[in-house]
Length: 114
Image (cartoon, rainbow, N blue to C red):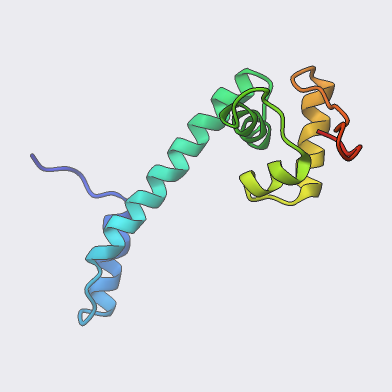
């Protein structure tokens, strides 16, 4: 079954024409993976938006859930598990708290937020 040329095919053809000495076949794989990743991300963002969430908001909620009961982590722990700064975690928590999706508590052991 033949398929029509896509953007990646056209880019590869340009490279083949300009640099016939290069093997551009890996570019086809990576180019299509990149395009697929972009398409999946757009679809996920659309689903998040249907529920009033952003990407980062969902990331925080998923991190809390996968952490297990009692579904609470300190902001620093959330930052480590989400690969963002504590400042970004604070902004996300502010949005989620305003939406009634998380509640902040003070740790009994050290008085910091959880």
